[in-house]
Image (tube, rainbow, N blue to C red; front, top):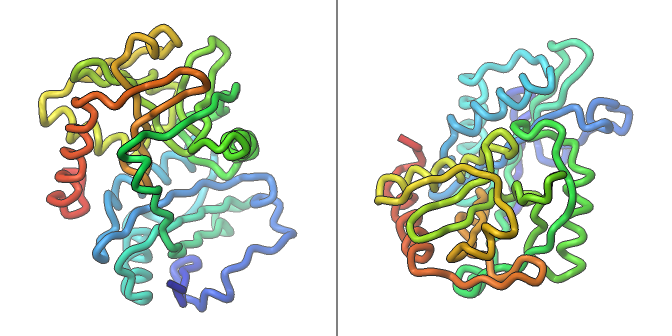
Length: 275
């Protein structure tokens, strides 16, 4: 589907005008932050959580701007209505400037890319890539290393790359959060080292409401070998089981299959809100 309009600093404009000049040094250098929001049945899922994280990402990298959370919410809802969106991925780009009043806010609708259904049944394959993001809690436009890691995954015909820190432990994917599962305990890398994904937050809410426990610790290869399974989460993919990381094979335990069903049920009944 082609979406006819986008939002620039709160003004709805034709999609053909959605351009950023090559002379924009802040954009060229990655001085910006972004969010991707899932829209289903005209509802932007977990909207306030995404807006809050966008603001936190900007704060972390020192990107000053004049857009309030209330303004962002209004602009997003106006764009969804104008485009008559049923299903889409809504992307927000906040690009910095030398003066905060010149920061620019772009909001656009993109066609969602749905993972192949067999990935949910059979699991996905991953490669590893040594890289630590400079600002783990900020979702920034500085994506070169993530791009190179993801390219390595695609060259190996894998779903994504999992990032390895200097201690040799897994932290996250290039566009996913990572978990191990042992029984009904979800094991997550330390929150200080990862992007705090909105889908990750929603999955943890659904899990803890249904008797699952959470353990936060560094994830070593020994932890992987001792785990019952592993999975990743993201806005576009929800929960995808891990079938293989490099040469390490995994199987989807029943507790993970149950969690996938519980999360789907949570999405069906939450009306797009975390609470």
